[in-house]
Amino acid sequence: MNLKIAVLSGDGIGPEVTLQAKKALHAIGVVFNHEFVFEDAYIGAIAIEKTGKPLPDQTLNLCRNTDCILFGAIGDPIYDNNPNAKIRPEQGLLKLRQELGLFANIRPIKAYPILMNSSPIKKEVLEGTDFIVYRELNGGMYFGQKTTNEAATYASDLCEYHETEIEKITHLAFQAAQTRKKKVTLVDKANVLETSRLWRRVVSKVAQEYSDVALHFLYVDNAAMQIILNPRQFDVLLTDNLFGDILSDEASVISGSKGLMASASIGEKVSLFEPIHGCYTEAKDKNSANPVASILSAAMLLEHFGLIEEAKKIVAAVEAAFINQVVTVDLKVDSRFGTNEVGDFIANHIMDAEDLYFKKDFVQIGRSTIV
Ligand code: IPM
Ligand code: MN
Image 1 (tube, rainbow, N blue to C red):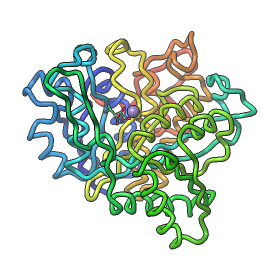
Image 2: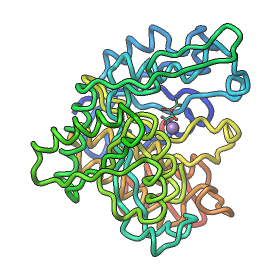
Image 3: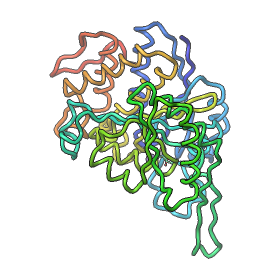
Image 4: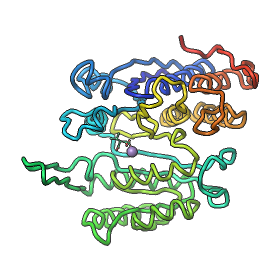
């Protein structure tokens, strides 16, 4: 398969972790005989610095004319500490989501047996956890009308949804449930919010087309508690933009590190694949950030194009890294391995199933290295 992949590595640790995902994809290309062509473009704070805009026209054009997007991270503390900043790096990602109609953000949550001790949650609670968050990504409070008064003493963010927006993601969530444990849990605040009551009506209607899937409802405050108390009960968790943002970060505690959490943002035509962690500027250029979330996002990219064996190969290589304890410091405080070594191990494992290039005390740069 030939795939044109736009690479928007962005800010902070974005470039270094995305490089590792490229290495993994390159290795997959070699082993399975696919041609992946990467094209880089600016987004976020680096784009503001270079062009004055968080999403330059050139980047948007590239994204419109590509098969898919591999995304890194955006953000910079300079903007976070200035509430009056008119231009912010995050606007680049939000605009991209809107322009490309990236309506469903899919975030798998898994407790890896080998990493159970990395999570602050008890092993007995974690065991067997495997669910997936379907977060609506184009609507809700993120994109509703925003107002502030001149004196900056008042502000509002409107939360709006249209039934068609809800229907689209709901179909995807039910289709996913059909291939899994056949359970969708709609998370909302229907005891208070009108938009949540709309979600319940629309989702209940769509559910009738999927008689083999059970639909459950849960208020978001209770869901926040249940995710920690009994995460095994979930299969597909369907929710709106803001609730999904918050709950998926919370759920990342289950796997032991936010540095493991991949995501896919499904669009009308082009889809985007990104780790859920942010720019983590403190770790920038320190070779310490965990590249696994980015590498697993690349696996989701392959899966999206039906390259299932290829995606499995990446996942297997990631699991081999866990088993061999080739992990970054977020998973093992005294680890000697950094972003690059973990990336090299995974890419080499993809290339050579039996770890030809890896000896426990000596990680060597192998064939898969992109120079
Ligand atoms: C995410 C991020 C973004 C969001 C930010 C960077 C705008 O937190 O993808 O979860 O809030 O959606
Ligand atoms: Mn978030």
